[in-house]
Amino acid sequence: MHNFAIIEEFARLRTVTYYTLRREDGIVSETDDFLNRMKRAPEYTDQFQQVLQWIEFIGDMEKGAHPHLFRSAGNCVALPPNATHLAEPIDLRLYCHLVNKHIVILYNGGIKTTRTAQECPNVSRHYYNAQSWTKQLLAIGIETSGRTITNIEELYLKF
Image 1 (tube, rainbow, N blue to C red):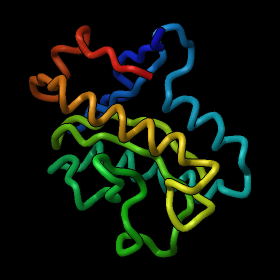
Image 2 (cartoon, rainbow, N blue to C red; image 1 turned 90 degrees about the vertical axis):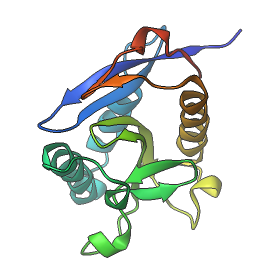
Image 3 (cartoon, rainbow, N blue to C red; image 1 turned 60 degrees about the horizontal axis):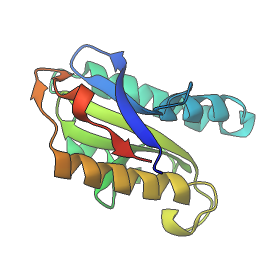
Image 4 (cartoon, helix red, strand yellow; image 1 turned 180 degrees about the horizontal axis):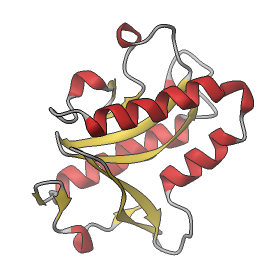
């Protein structure tokens, strides 16, 4: 038997609506899990704040979310963006699916401690989940209207 995840609205900012996933039988969303864990990692407070600032910056930008504002991560994207946009490298990763310039689905993430996400004990699970969910969403097809996913009730993903 599979566990399933449902998509729910996470935050609606000026130009971008952020969504997240929650296990069908779960209480905490994937993004809330990330936020809760990072709040308990004081050595990463500055990096955590930078990721939150990127979410807010992108969400309030007049032009909305664009690929160059994210880090490429297989068939999905991640925050923060590549080092060219940052004062110094950041080890934190929050995996996402960029649906369009007005809709971003935030997944989960963590502190990357190895050269690649795939080999990192902290983020590999989140990386592979993000790959799977993005692949499923691309196969199902996300219908949107403005900043809203309209077929949200039909988007059940294998967890």
